[in-house]
Amino acid sequence: MRSARWSRFTAHPTGLFTALPLHAAGSAPDRVVSSYTPTVASLLRGGDEAGEDGTRARMLGVAAATVPGQSVLPGATAELNELAARLPDDVRLTRLDDATRAEVAAALPDHGWANPACHAEQDLAQPSRAVSLLGDSRLDLTEASRGRGHRAAGAYLSACPSVLGGADLADEALNPAAAMQHAGYRRVIATLWPVGDRLARVAARSVYADLCRDRPFRPERSAGAVHDLMVELRRQTPRRSVAVGAVRSPRALTGPTAIGV
Image (tube, rainbow, N blue to C red):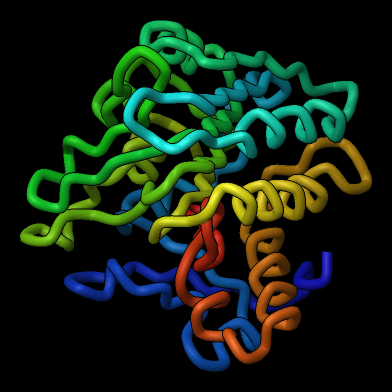
C-alpha cells in the first residue's frame, strides 16, 4: 500500500461542507490520507480496536443488480464474483444475490463486514428515509442500524449516494454510512455523489486488492486503500483531476470516501 506511512487526517465537516469531497480538495491527496467522522463520539470510539467482536471473518455480500424501475447493474454481481475469488481462506463470504429486505436485515447482525452493491436513494428533505434498493423493496437506514449489539469490522457501501445528509439538517449524521457506524460497524467506505456501475467495479477491485494483500483480510487499511485508489484515478486522468478526485466515490468517483477508518 503506497500510503501506508502517510499522515492521517480525519474531518468532521458541518453545514454545506458535508456535501463536498474535502478529501480530494487541492493538494490534500498529496499530503494526507483522509477519512471522515459523523460525530466526535464516533471518532473517540473508533480507536478501540480491541472492541471488535469475533465476526470479522464473516462477510456479507449483497448484489441487487436488477431492481424494478432502475437501471441494471451488471457490475454488482461481477463485483461479488471478484470479491469471492480474492478473499483469503480465513474469511467466509455469505452471498445474497437479488436478496429481499428481510434476508438482508436478518443477515447483517451475524457478519463483521458488509458489502451491499446496489442502487440507493437519498431524500434530502428527510435524510432518515435514505434507502438501499433491493429486489423486492427498500431497506432504510433505520433497519440497517437495528440488531447489532456488538462491534463489527466495517462495511463497503457500493451504492450511491450513501454518505450525503439532508439539506436542512446538514450537520445531523443522518445517512446510511453514519447509520452503519452507529449500528456498530467501525469503518465504512461509502459514496458521496452518484457513481457509474463500471467505475464502481473498478473501485471495489482496487480497494479489496489492498485489504486482502499480504493476507489475512485487513480492514484497518480501508482509508489508505481508498486514498491509493483516488490518487491513481487522478494520475490516469490528469485533465479531469477535479471530477475524478473530487466528484464521485465507490459507485462513480469522489473517492470513495472513508468514514471512521
